[in-house]
Each structure stands twice: as C-alpha cells, then as structure tokens.
Length: 144
Length: 144
Image (cartoon, rainbow over all chains, first blue to last red):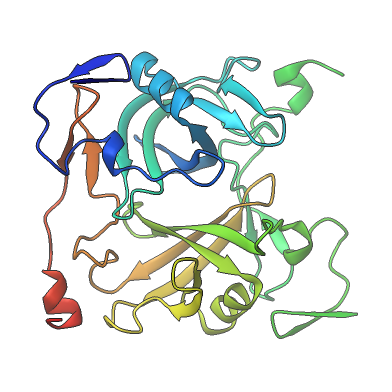
C-alpha cells in the first residue's frame, strides 16, 4: 500500500498505476501540455515535478515547476487566470502529460488566449500573430 | 542576409523571424506538440533538432530527433503513418512548438490514434484507456 497524491492506493492492476507509468527527466520533471477541453485549443506547455503533479491532482488546479525561477507555482496565482483540471492523460512512453482544463481568462502571460499565438509564415522564415491579444500584460499583472 | 530552412531571408521585421525566436535546450532540441488540425486531438509530443525542423518545414512532413535512439527519423517512415504539416506555431517563450497536421492512420506506435490514450481515473492513482486501439502494433510494423 502506497500513498500517491493524497489517495490510498489499493489493488491497482499491474501496469495501470498512473505514477508507475510516468518517467521523469534527469531534473525530476515531466512536460505537461495544457489544452482547453471545450475548444481543443492548446494553451501552453509547462513542466511539473512530482509535488506539482500531486498538488494538481489533489486540488484540480494546475501547479508547475518553473525551471527559470526554480520555483513551485500555481497557474493564476498572480493573474487570477486559473485552470480547472478536467482530465489528465499520459502518453505511451509515459514521459509527457496532456491535461484538459477550463481556463479563466488568457493562458498566456502576454495576454493571449494561448501561448502559441504566433505561427510560421508560408515563406518559412517570418512569423505572424494568429489570435487577438485579450489583455495587455500590465492589465493582468499591474504596471511594473 | 541569412539562410534559414533553405530559404533566403530578406527584410523580416526584427523580433518576427521564426528561427530567431526559438530556444533550443542544452542538447539542441525543442519539444514539438503534434495536433490533428481537423479534430483538435493532440496526437503526440516528440523532439526536434534544427535539422529536423528545417526538413519538416521544407517537406511538410514531420521529422524528429529520437533521444533514445539518437537518430533522425520521419514520422511514418516504417508505418506509413505520415503527418502532413498544416501549421507550425511556437509559444511565448520560444521553447515549444505546436504543429498542426493531418495524420494518416494511428499516430501512436501502439496503434492508437493518439499517444495520449490513457487517463488518470477519479481515484487519483489508476488509469483507464480512453480510445479504441485502431491496429495492433504487429499489424503496423510486422511481427518481430
């Protein structure tokens, strides 16, 4: 009997235990793709450590590990733009998560719905913005 | 004047050049999320190096870098399950790609449409299969 994510684990069939199927990288992290369940729009990708995944499962809000800031963070902690978790899938290799959410406000800190707001142009070198900016960053986080 | 991806680059506005906005990790790789454009289903995530991204842009088929096999590969080279590229987006940090494709057959080497065919159950520890297996692996790759 082991504890995982705050639940007591009893009799999960071999090979079907969620945590046992996950592979963490050398830094103890796994990438999590975040998708808006209602629209299918991919919003962002961020990294989770075991503690942030457990907290995500427990609270149904997304928690990540910031590699640049070396910091545990909750999506929306500054902006209020939280993500309510609807489903957590993992891939065949167990080294990537796909998390379905309902997003409040813009997912991107630059004020776009999705962080993937720029696409490559047909010329193969330049890029274009593909969606409207919903808010200016200083409207989300305050002027700095 | 610089060459990028086989095109000659002329007068792209500062900050809007595609390659200049990308950040590669310490191994020279960037993760690419692959999404079925027509349905929004996220199919897989794999890693690209600069050469595989250039080849992807040039041919409109997806090429990756296998970290486990240390090998350049085209999706579908063994299975015939190629991906025709429709759009290549990148995120605000420039460290993740989101590629829209039309997928022939199953994306997953285990015969599922998506590699994300398993999700966490409500108990928080076990997992369930969420989509039908379209083919058995030995029907795709031959018996080993």
